[in-house]
Length: 411
Ligand code: ADP
Ligand code: ASP
Ligand code: MG
Image 1 (cartoon, protein in one colour):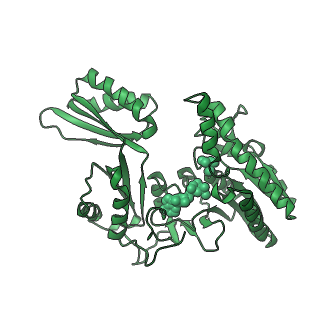
Image 2 (spheres, rainbow, N blue to C red):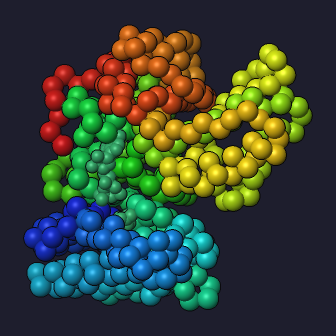
Image 3 (cartoon, rainbow, N blue to C red):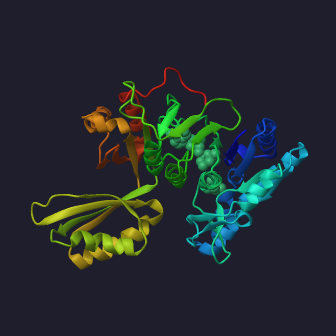
């Protein structure tokens, strides 16, 4: 008998039929004698619908009220799932984030979990009930509802597993595990039996939305055994593990991540003097805009070009700031491009292999894909390219690094 935290994502609870199917699945686990805490997302599409509603009233919605609105999606699914379970004869009880007391900071829309009160959960488990908890939401110290950022139900699941010292946290979704790359983009993507926390963290932060990055951070920090599985198909899924596979079979690259969420800004003809990088990035950071990649060219004529990327949501705001900076520091011009994509290869095997970046650039060159920016770390290489070549680039790299499955997978 084990204590298991299970999280079911939006598509898995996307209709009443599916909720009934999830209830049957939970019933199966319960009948084996396991203690179960189940976290659910809102029905698929619901969070987007709620955001759109809010935007019809305020283009830039009030952050506190936005969280009041978007958290309701999960309140519906916990009630429906608890009802479905009771209807099949399984004792169950639902809780919102604030009823559990999942305490967060007050950063609406991207709150961080600070503390979880597990007394109530343990009491319900001891009474033999399946406990259903709303994902994605918490409460701050003043009693205001907060949400954890898109995809945040994963983090609720892992945080509850950490607080309860659960035997495993199982993330049930619409794919049967973590793949070498998004199986909806590359047909020949392969399911991984295992992936290290370190690699999963890079994959998530570089755009693989199968797990929210904070969920992976949490699981790594508190050593929560974490597995990604298909909601309605049997299979072992993918285990996120601390162990590195030390066998000779260890591939150099474990996966390829990509995102279309960024935009690129360049300021040209910048006088090359000490402090100029701060003058450019300072005002952008002061406006609370996160900067991702930065490239500064070496100057030849005492001027330099300076390029960086930001999230597309912040693109226009960052461009306006940069235009003002260009005038104040005497730079020549500002160029802005939001038709870019970032593609990254990730693998702990890179540490012990030379020439990985070169192989990547060779594969892209063969397809005549121009690289606009490059950044590297110990276990990843990222490039920025024109967004129209994104799928071609991911497929070519997938083949070049021997990641292709023998036959197309059915996800
Ligand atoms: P849920 O609603 O269950 O949280 P998500 O849509 O957030 O589901 O995450 C599952 C999706 O993640 C898959 O449908 C898949 O398209 C996408 N995905 C992106 N990268 C990967 C990857 N490397 N492996 C598996 N799925 C991935
Ligand atoms: N419902 C939220 C979202 O769509 C949280 C989640 O699904 O994990 O982002
Ligand atoms: Mg998700």
